[in-house]
Length: 342
Image (tube, rainbow, N blue to C red; front, top):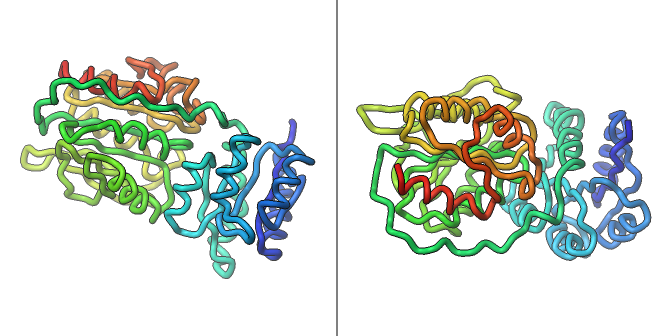
C-alpha cells in the first residue's frame, strides 16, 4: 500500500518533532518534510510534492490563512489545519483547507494521545482522498419566486461532514426568511459549532444558532447541533416541533450523528420533511435519509462532482435514499422547488 506523503508545517520545535515521530508510526503515513513557516513550506512543496500538508494557523512571517490563500491557486493541495479553539479555522476552510483538528494542550496527556494516535491521522487519511480545486463555484442568485407560505409543520434537515462547513454555508446563504425551520448536523468538535453558527448568522438572511434542548423549530431559523457528546433529535412537544439534545454514545463513529437526526425527523415529521445530505466521509446519515424517504419525505443528495469527499451522499444514493442528486449550487434552488409543492 502506498504511504500518504505528508508535509508538517509547525513553528514549535517540540510540537513539530512530536508530530513527526508519531505520524511516522502509522504505516499508512510518511512525513517527507517539515517546515517552520510558509516560506519553508512553499519550498518543501515544490521539492517533495507531498500528498497532504498539516498546517498550524499561527505561524511566523505569514499566517497560515494568508499562506493558504496564496498557495491554493498555484499548488492545490489537501490541507489539514491545526488550530486552537478560534473562528480563524473557518477562514482557513474558506481559503481551501479540507479538514481541521483542535490543537491539544501538550500538558494534557489524554488529549494529546487522542490527538496524536486518532484524530490527526484520521484527518490526514480523509484529506488524502479529497477533491481539491474543483469545488469553488460562483453561485447564481435564486430566481425570484412567490414566497413560501409560513408552515410550522414543515422541516428541512441537513447533514454533512468533511467539506460540510462550506457546503452548508453555500446552501443556507440562499435561504430566505420564508424557509421552514432547518435542523443541521455537521461533524465538528465541541465549541466550534457555536462559533460556526454565529459566523453563519452574520452572513445569512436566516437566523442561525447553536441548538439547545427545547429550541422551537421555526420558519426562517437554522438550528445547528452542538459538537461534542450530544445527539440532536426532532421531537414534538404539545403539538409543536422542538429539538432535543441529549448525551449518548457515538453512532457511526460520530456524536452528533446525522443518522440520529434523520431518523427522528422520519418518525416525527414523516412526509412533512425534506432531507439533504452533503459532502462527507463514510456513511453517516444514509440510513436515516432512507428512513425519511420511506416515511414520505423528499430527499436531496449532493453530486460527486461538487463534493470534497463523495462518501455520505454516495452511500445514500446507492441505497436509494436520494430522490434528487444535485450540484452544490443547485441544492437551494431544488429545495425551494420541492417546498413550493409541499
